[in-house]
Image (cartoon, rainbow, N blue to C red; front, side, top):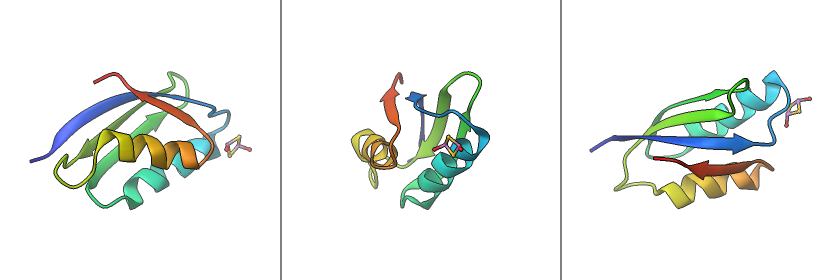
Length: 72
Ligand code: 9UX
């Protein structure tokens, strides 16, 4: 099964941050799709919760120096 999760993201200040975060997310096993918006500080991931958890996704973002919090 694949679900969609939405999260807020902090610490992104330029467009390259967006590419960086999207690249990290897309590299994670279990993540099918990832988009992040600089203007709204919102992100969306389509992922398989049997393969990767929200906590894993948050940790990957935070390891890169950003903050993330799922809203859904
Ligand atoms: Mo832009 Mo983001 O110079 O980590 S890449 S601030």
